[in-house]
Amino acid sequence: MKMTAIPLQPHFEYRLWGGERLKRFGFQFKDASIGEAWTASARPNKGSIVTAGPFAGMTLEKLYNEQRELFGIEAQTFPLLIKWIDSNEDLSVQVHPNNELARLLENEPYGKNECWYILDAPAGAEILYGHTFESKDTLQQSLSDSHVMSGLSRKHVSQGDFIYVPAGTVHALTKGVCVLEIQQSSDTTYRLYDYGRLEQATGKARELHISKGAQATFTPHIDYMEPPLPLDHFRTRLTHNPYFFVEKWMITQHEIVETDTFRLLSVVDGTIEVDGVSFDIGATLILPANQSFHLSGEATCIVTGVAPLTKPMARIGIDIGGTQTRVAVVSTDGRVEKQFKFKTRPHLGLDQLLHQIALIVGQFKLEYDIAQVGIAAPGPLDLKHGSFLTPPNLPNWHYQAIVEPLHNRLHLPVTLENDANAAALAEAKFGAGRHVDSMFYVTVSTGIGGGFVYKQQLISGAHNSAGEVGNMIIRTDGPTHPTLNSGALETRASGTALHERALKKGFSNSTTLLHNDSERDMFVDDLATGLANIIHTIDPDLIVLGGGVTASAPLYWNQLQDAVAMRVYPHLRGETPLVLHQLQGDAGVIGAAFLS
Image (cartoon, rainbow, N blue to C red):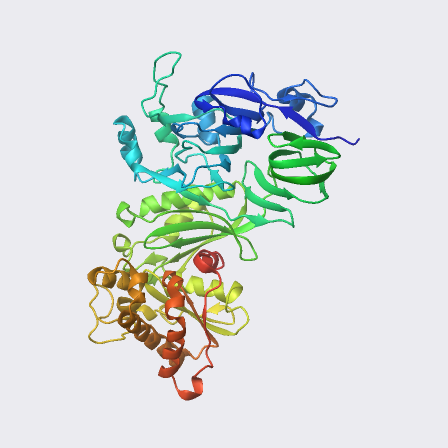
């Protein structure tokens, strides 16, 4: 039987920080300080109500319980909640529990993973997202002393941004930011800090939940990233996680949409017609399961539903850098699906790193069938025993094993490789070197490393040290280093070397340093000498340059090409192209995921 879209009437919530700005999105209410419009809610006594059609007058809770075939899922209770939020003042600093903690501490079926689509924000707006505390003890102490604000991180936001907020993330919306919030159907919030505000009705401060909040918080903070994925000419996936998916639909012409399970469609701009019925901004509709809908008009819609239970195959890539560590899900065709990142913090000890990696992989296992885990780390490494040797950027982890301890935590195959080699493998399989037989990759970042790939196979050398070009001596009178040769390429041309030279000579940063003719000449001379040595030693089809310093490539690229040509045999000039990486900052995690 053909079912039409089911429109919902919102439930409005008073909030201390609310106002009247939700009226701008088509909502009608009389009370002051309305902070939230719950447009799709099956919460007891706070439910949305069907406004038209054969189910008019029913709450969403009753509709779900009695007409389960409309939804196409079997969850015991309706799993999602949609809110439109007006932050007329700064919201309290808060954190939400995951499913496990919600059951343990609150006897609730769902934790609270949520996301925001930014409807409106003042110029230069920032929200609170994450923190800098390194342990739960320091976090809890700062909360008890009301000093938590000094350790909170801020994120710039503007209209149209999308932000996923996993359970365990400290966060707060700020004054003037309006959002559409999609979340699990939970009202459990742990309030950590509330600026000393008092409720007008009682004259008392609202309750804080310091102990539970500290228990629920990722500590140290783990930052989530998921690139948007275009699905077709009008739909873009904003997130796909174990709890829900969210898509942005840009309706500009007639479209036909078919559903397997239900969808919740919220009109955030313009007017849409669904099977000839018009809906304006502020409307939230149920698109029932196993139906076809004709859409037209001019509208921007945010659409959500429940992620399917099937788990696609994927790999985990881990890129351990001197500054930050990234743990990513990589698809079988080499695309980064999503990732978490966090500060590496080697001073905290290796167990802390292993704990955070295991926590993240545990999250990914809820959604993916993980085949293997690969680790890219700065060298030198002992690949045979799966351990660090003496990586300069990880001084506290020298001679410590990582493969076996991580395997014991994850119960998955784990492989370790030099980070430059992993990036080289990724560029050879999926990036700039995918069309040639032999490729040498050089990363110019915090340090300098390299990797040689022949027919998409890493050439590691007899002692797994092939490609360690960062220790290549460029100038015998160069600077000393505790673990590298005096005058090594890394001590001359790495991002660290440029930064130190910039500070010493009064430049604001390494980019400013490279604007200086003599300093740029010195950098180019050193790097070109290293690249020419590689060409004479390996004779690859291609050299790919990557790493953070390549962000400044427009300042030196042509000069570098000429300098390399002047340093090689005449018959080699122009025969070994020098190109920039294609995978940008994802090469390390992609290559790590495909280690064998």
